Amino acid sequence: MPFRRRSHSSVAVDGSST
Image (cartoon, rainbow, N blue to C red; front, side, top):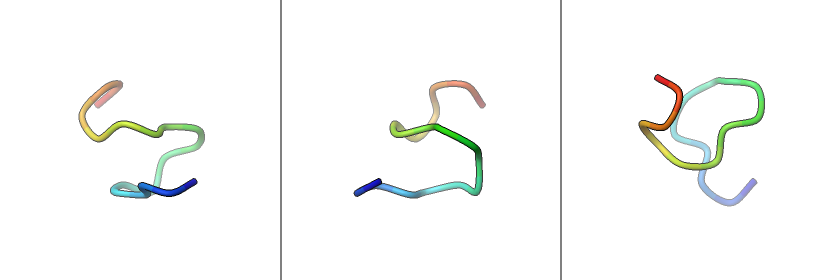
């Protein structure tokens, strides 16, 4: 995981499933 913005489970993009 290169871009870990939030502490989700398996989210790469920031603001996708938020």
